[in-house]
Length: 142
Image 1: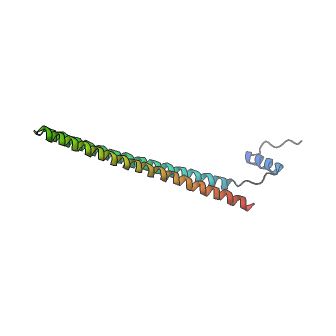
Image 2: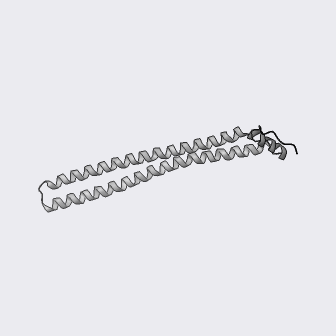
Image 3: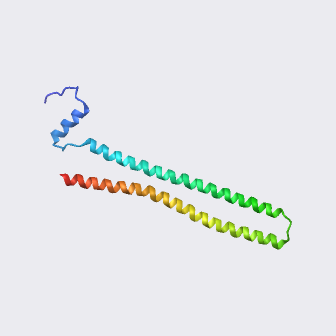
């Protein structure tokens, strides 16, 4: 067996190896394009998730500010002299409003989280569907 020159590049060596084994040519650019699309989809999905988290945190902050403002208002109303029935009515009204606000806020937070997650997953789902179509088209060409 003749000695091969040591100046062969790896690509030359693999090309020769593939020809010797009769391996079909591989379109490296097509593979890179495919994976580039995958990475772009992952980036879009991560961005959508981050945007959703940002809007969720922003909304929760606003909800907390509203709750603290209501508590401060209630504390101010307790300072005013009044009879026990009025004080009890104010406490009951505050408890009712707090409960209703908590339910509304919980529903809103859940909807924001659902929307964010759905958007992120839909980006990935669309890419998976596109990748499967690319694979099917590739098999159809042979």
